[in-house]
Amino acid sequence: MKRVSEAFDLVRDEYITGYDDKQIRIFPTLALVAKEFEISFSTLRKKSANEGWFKKRKSFQQSREEFVIRKNFKGKCSKLAKVSRNTLVLVEFIQTAINKEVEDAKAGKISHSIEDMVRLVSCLQKIQKLSEQANTTLNNLEDPFIEFY
Image 1 (cartoon, one colour):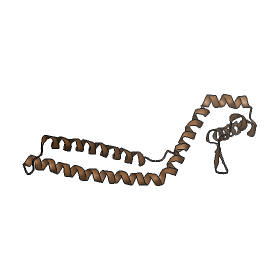
Image 2 (cartoon, one colour; image 1 turned 90 degrees about the vertical axis):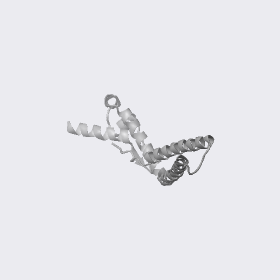
Image 3 (spheres, one colour; image 1 turned 180 degrees about the vertical axis):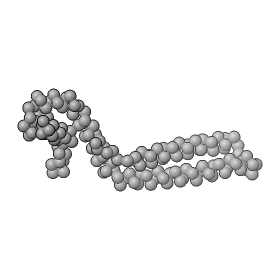
Image 4 (cartoon, helix red, strand yellow; image 1 turned 60 degrees about the vertical axis):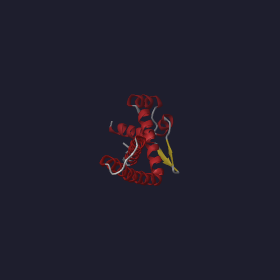
């Protein structure tokens, strides 16, 4: 009985994860796998349906696709991360300058019209949004790669 379960393990793995052929990932059909391993197609179809092989295969394919995309994007990803970090530094600089301006206006060192103060507040809000977007981008870029099961 152990040999049969080992054979089904091999069949399951080949169907779900496929195999490499000349740098291309091949995902054989159930019929091809059944023929290759000399197993009845109807038996294999029932077993795969009961164990959810098709869903597992789709999940594996999606994970693999995302891994390949992230791998190909790695160089651009590091540049985007650098831009995001620089954006955060710029945001901090601008926020400090605006806050100093507001504090100076409160202390009476300089005077601003209401329109000027509204522009400063509006600028602070836009800078805050830019900061959130840069931070979100960094968090998304620094997530670990998806692991295969």
